[in-house]
Amino acid sequence: MVNAAGLDAQAVHEMAAPPSFAIHPSRGQYFLLDKSEGGRVGRVIFQCPNEHGKGVLVAPTVHGNLIVGPNSEPVAGDDTSTTASGLAYVRQTALRSVPSVDFRASIRNFAGVRAVADTGDFVISEAAPRFLDLAGICSPGLSAAPAIGEYAAELLAKSGLALERKADFTASRKRVRFRELPPEEKARLAAERPAYGRVICRCETVTEGEILDALAGPIPPRSIDGVKRRAGAGLGRCQGGFCGPRVLELLAREQGRSPGDIPQDKAGSWLLACETKGGAR
Image 1 (cartoon, rainbow, N blue to C red):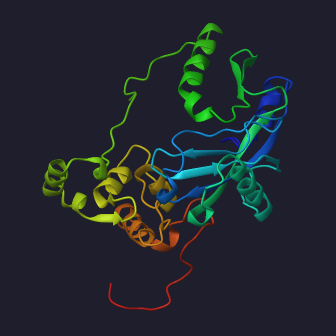
Image 2 (cartoon, rainbow, N blue to C red):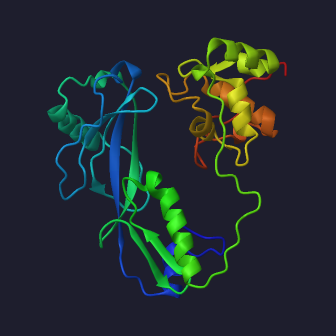
Image 3 (tube, helix red, strand yellow):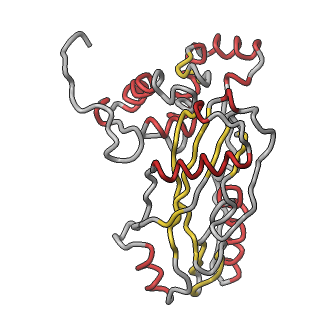
């Protein structure tokens, strides 16, 4: 990680205090299975934890899919690629817990990298006056983030830092999830804003109105996967095969950008290389 001054996180830390722990990246690979497998289990199925963590799990997702994984393997840096050997291990290990999982229903494979500290997880401490270490936050990091933020503010206040509550802070956000609404509410919304009556993502029933809401948000997405993370378009069985071009079109139209400048996700993940044919515009 590099900050605005061009220094990496480790260099900044060493300027404040000597390091008291080291981070060893560990990659975990996953299968995401179609909703046809979503009812295979009714709760998270864990195996016995070992030195590598909680092990391979089989779990239903909040969207009705089934997720299987992860393994644990050391990597260099933020390497989120998937491998045949890693996925084979996940599959073989998961079948020991739930032998009936149908991996033919897999719709996506992905990987994440945990920041594993050599002192144990959840390193939350004051490394130097008004300089906190918040590191080694592994599996429950997303769920724990709000509480960690509040605790970090308490530590900074105790160290003498003057804290001011942000006047326009918003503690919650409201999102329309069209497919979850009752029929009469869907009809009302579509009448008021016709964009809610145009389904862009067929698999997840995500409408143009929901995508436009995301694009008008305080931190608007700049990529196709950014729209997916906010509105859900592309999460379904076809993984954006049908809705991807429509999402790209909306990004270009609403943000005044060239379609060729819109990536799938990170910089360099371009979808379009050039225009091959002319025609009416």
